[in-house]
Every structure is written in C-alpha cells, then in structure tokens.
Image 1 (cartoon, rainbow, N blue to C red):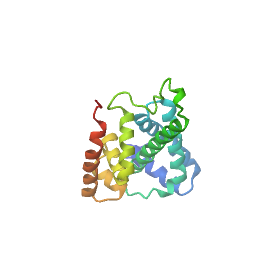
Image 2 (tube, helix red, strand yellow):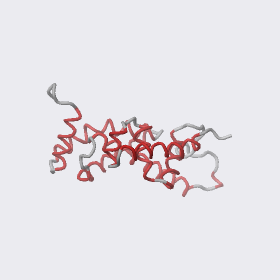
Image 3 (cartoon, rainbow, N blue to C red):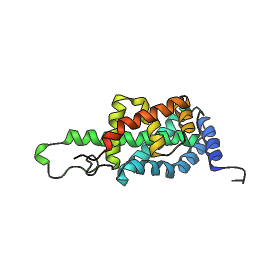
Length: 186
C-alpha cells in the first residue's frame, strides 16, 4: 500500500472488483473486513460463539449482496450496517428459539443470552431496539449507526439515503422511544 492509498481506498477498490465478479478480490475483501465485522458483532452479542455466527452470516451477506452496495456511503459504512443487522438478526433467532424451547417445568436457569439481569446491558439495548423496530423500523439503523457505532450524521444520511435533517430527527425520536426502555426496573 502506498502512502497515498488508505485502507478505505483499498476496500473500495476491492469492493468494485468483487462487484465485477473478481473472486480473488472477494476473498481478499472478506478477509480484510472480517476483524471489523467480528468486532461489530461482539459489541452487540455478549457470547463469542453467537458473535462469530453473526459475523459469518454477515460475511455471507456481504458476498451475496455486494451488488446492492450502491456507493452512496463508504464501503466500510455499508459493512457496518450489514454486520449490525446480522448481529440483531442472530439475537432475534436466539430469542425465538429460547422462547420455543421454553418449558415451565425446566425453569432451573434462564438462558443468559436472552435474559437481561441488569439494566443497561447489551441485551436491554437489543430488547429496546426490537421494540423500536416493531413500532418504527425506519429509526433503528440511524440510531444504531450513531449511538452504538459512532458514525457521523453525514455518513448515516449517505448510508440510509435520507436527508441530514431527517436522519437527525429519526435519531432524536428513536432516543425518546428507547430511553425509557433502558431505565432500571424497580
């Protein structure tokens, strides 16, 4: 990599080549984004095995849906969205399977992956995001990209394809919905 080439430029170049069907570029791209994808999934899912499953799902989505990347935002921002969605999807699957397997006679110990024991944990956040997604799905991605991953409002606007003012409004409104859900329960 030359001094004038940044890692972001390398990713964009690899993404373009992968979109054009270059299998070697796709392999290199997935290898380069894997640590970032895994870090994103680990920031949402408390168990390493679950985070690794979500990361693998995200890589599969990146590989199979790379043609949906339009270039409106940076490739790394798109990867953030794919990874965050994969982590939330994995959480929902875990929650559904735990609920389906729930048997009152086997109530010895709840599954910690689906039960929050202290307010403010990642699991509380996932529950709050699930509520937000059910009621106002257009607010979830901007809120997650801003408050969990720290992206700028401009990057988020580019990623979701919405005006900057709309993004700021959605994030503000989403915080108003989520905040009471994250307060400690008495």
